[in-house]
Length: 414
Image (cartoon, rainbow, N blue to C red; front, side, top):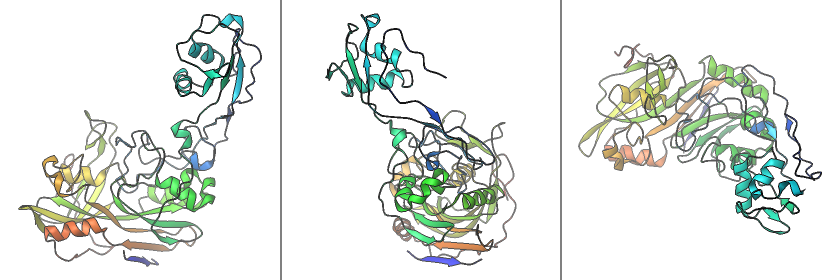
């Protein structure tokens, strides 16, 4: 890879128990000061607090099967802390009032800070015992048993654990780092992906990021999109970068291979919202919840895959909506090669993911205020794909390349 840089409520005690040996009490973390506040899941550190992440790249994936619980884009930096959950083992001594109850009901009556379903899981997995023996969810208690509870962390409570992983760091200084994200790596923990994410890797590489909300992540790339991302190393840098993203002053450019012959340069100016029938997808929309989105594109080259025309595009984002490039190009008839959500299913065999790579990134350095920019080459799989398609050498537009005002459905197209 070529890396280039340019300086430019209280708990009620049930009557069926004696005093409970359970020192764990819920405590609320203080909110981190900032702009827009949002409630986050249970957490133990600022890194696990949840400033909503800007979908600065246009390819954030909060609606995918893997990350369905992640927030949408365009929300500012400031989180509320969640609840710090004490998972220390404790003992319950039942009294005759519990006689005749099912074990799970008896325990859930006494332990209100954990859900009944979660307690049932612990019973079935052997983490709740009755007089020293494994319990059964539906067993009947007599009201004189000693119940030992060994709480287990829920998957989301393990989401902010440092994990060793190889990271391709393009640039690093005291304020930020820029990395080249590979395909297959989820950026932030979410439903189905509580471990093995970029956030986990960042916490391992830089333990200091445990003191920065979301470990410094300010924007996302979709799981299968490759390329450049910036991560803040301090709260001050994170605040500055989020403000730049909101002001649309961060320059983000992608290379995308699309099906069809795109005739000329142009732009798509069309709002994007959740698909009316499929919650895993986004769509061009004029609905009340749709958000403005603008994608400029420049024709770089053309080729053929299995006798079908393809066009390599250089895309520049003004906004950062979920799946923006993928949705916009599909809306004007040029879906990306390999795209599993918006592409052509019968042509998926040509590439195992959407052919989309974030190759340029430019921003004002949070410390110096000077414009800095990075550029990264194509990953090997996209290089091989272009070779197969016979796309000629790249002819990229410079950073200041003017583009014509245009739009797709919901707007106008040049």
